[in-house]
Length: 178
Image 1: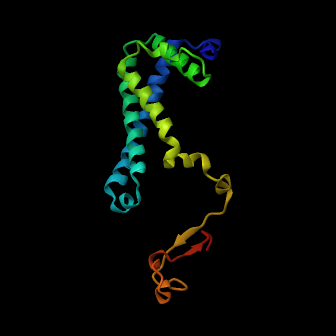
Image 2 (image 1 turned 30 degrees about the vertical axis):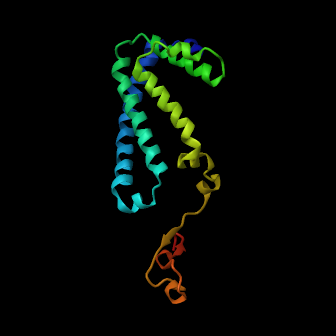
Image 3 (image 1 turned 180 degrees about the horizontal axis):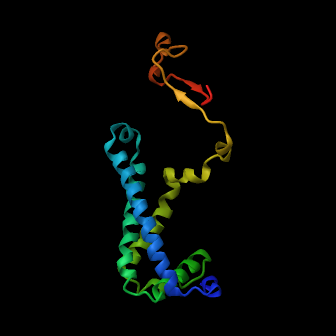
């Protein structure tokens, strides 16, 4: 809060910025997550390799996104920024482990409370889903030379002649330059 005050940005201006930019980004994300959900639920190959957790976290994220978009009409009813400062103070108290955070959101609109609850629920289940891989992705991956996996029917060392059960996963790695 002090940063915005020091920069001379009013709470109302920050709230309007959050509504406009957050709303635009939210609708773009909604389009993307709808495509991902459709692919995961209706593509037989993807559905076969998806766990319950993969689908559940995707649907939780979609619900959270929809709740966030549903907060926009409520936020438009009070453009003075007073509600936003309560949520900013709540977040600061949560992140700094100070008591009294709940007092700031006790009288908030129920849609905000559900949005906060689902957000904290996502943080709770996060370590047990594939979302955790965003923190464990190897940095070396970004600087490596690309390669392409090419699968052929008659791969070198055809596993059918050896009696392997993994005949469909044969292939050879090729550099894009080849």
